[in-house]
Length: 298
Length: 337
Image 1 (spheres, rainbow over the protein chains, first blue to last red):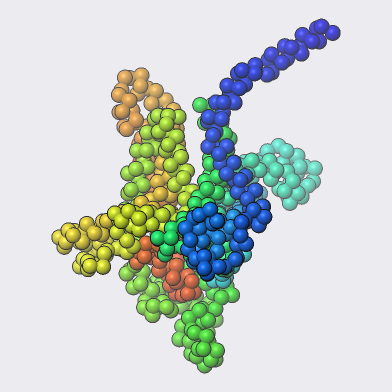
Image 2 (cartoon, rainbow over the protein chains, first blue to last red; image 1 turned 90 degrees about the vertical axis):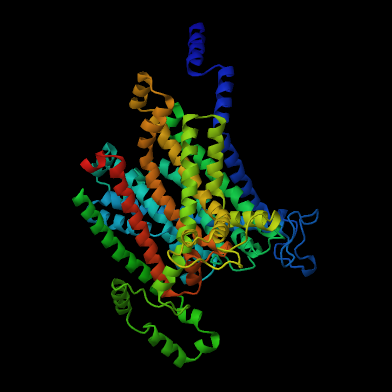
């Protein structure tokens, strides 16, 4: 009995650090990753806002009141009103929905498509691989925003079309990464074992290799949501995004860009883009740092 | 080296031809009809007008024939005629290119001159306040929407403080300098018109700073990472053991080795700048390729879109080639492989 208690104590002594040390380590980690924590908080805050937007917005976002045009920020209209007398704050809150939705859908669909293409290429090898990767290179040799702009313009204005246009330019980077990850995995013993058992290539790729390559993919996905939101709002700013009067941040900046004296119309929606993109970038930066074994030990 | 160069050039040509095919297919297989975008509603309702228009621009031919007409022209330096400006696309591009080249070159220089030293200092003084500041600055730089940043600096320095000139390349009271290169800074200096030079320079400050924000962040981060890598190498330790000055170790030993990834990114950054100009030029009313691209895209001006996308793809590929070749200069080992 007492011997057992002794081993337990010993086990605790070896396995766990004393509380003081743990606290110090936590503090050190926090100091090191404070930007990532801030980023996570920003992202989370915007997600909550996007979900609750219609309930917390002080005015309906489409409510036009021409007697209340271009009012500066005040107690009634926290961020002022725009050219049609609509409340900028309410539109900004509701606008978070489209930006986040567009960012996530581009990155998620792009990641799935890219992973499949890159994964199949790497697993199939030979001619198929050559063909698929040349196709990837081909898309990559165009500047993304210019190609997306041409496609978005050709498809016609609308958020869905903009997302489709972005998808066309978005998948190649995921395809490249997926290929390099699958190449590492395809000669592993467990793959050979699966082949020996007689599993088909589709099952091996999807059920065995892919789950083992997910880590780096997840990081790239997080990092990329911010970039996707930035590109989407840029296209939207150019008039290739949403159809008015849908509130979207890029379009809101565009509406206010001539109003240098009434700066609040354009300045606040743009600031909203900045904060949400910053959130994803801070988070992604921290995660990358944390996953990089070299930077962790230093 | 020669053999390497030939293979690279050959694959580049293949990529360029494929690029034209992609551009062509995108612009022709999509549902939008350029005729509706170009002709007014009245004219578009008139079948004779529409047919005449189609015949005029060769839009009635089979699609592969249209592609070969496009390719044939391309080989002869003929990019077709812009539907909206009614001028040869190549003339349009040549007219608008200098403004963009001037803007993006200044922005590029700005981000290299600030970004590389900042990255080096951040790496050398790792985890100091300056490192944190550099990290924060570059992360904010890559997160800020270019078009918003452009608006904010314009509202602040032009509208509010009134210390910067407004949009455009020159104040209205100045005439452009006599055309030599199309770069106002160079042309005005050549002509000795120093007041024009000063005005053009002042007009460049805001847009180039805005444009540099993104690339500055990228270059700072890459330089820092590459320097950290280099500073951890054995030859740095050897240098210290020999008693070399820290400054010599950093500048002469570590920095040259850290430059390769920076050069890769430099090429990429220049390409990022070209994309950034679309947004920046729109806000600053900068008469460059970015604005031209945007206008062609929204009016579905296919010859112009094809011409410009093709041109930019070629620039991309050439930049990549230059980047790869400069490895050879920076790292003799590359050639030997």
